[in-house]
Length: 221
Figure 1: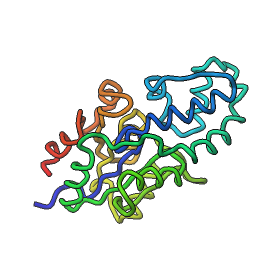
Figure 2 (figure 1 turned 180 degrees about the horizontal axis):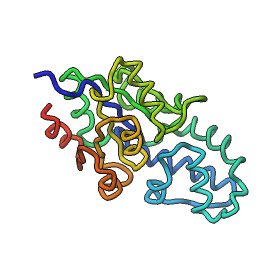
Figure 3 (figure 1 turned 180 degrees about the vertical axis):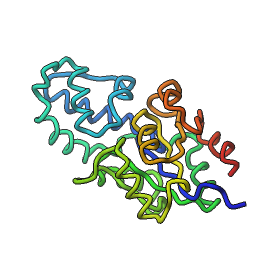
């Protein structure tokens, strides 16, 4: 039976790769430059997801820089340090490779749409899954609005020749659930990620999974 979905678009951080160690480590290096921090990984799970500029803003506020005096200064520092440390202790979530392999075997195309800067996103995905494993990867680029704006999702679908009704969108945060809704895509909430079940449930995704292999069962792949 040809499955209803021909494609799945994935968020990166907290969905297909556990990147929290790299994000926390790099952010704390930046905060230390200003005599601030450190932040814990649990704090960072609530801070990340909306691009590095928002990440710096939330991190500085969490560290007590209420006036955001270091905000503009933090951007180039973070970018430089993240280039060096973006692969720090990356790991795929348990069962993720099996889920992805099963999707590929069923004929689905796989794409990544992340608010991480494009080059770092590609580097992250290729470090864990190898070159060419995903059919398309799109990260933050000049001129493309960040998620939850649906522009990136539409670009991915266009590149792969897909219609919204043929695609799933999988992510672990409210930003991802809003991206799916804005693009007219059925959503899979990844409750194994950074934010957990409660945040995802509020957006009524079509599927909500505690483990990647639950998705295989739900989609009857």
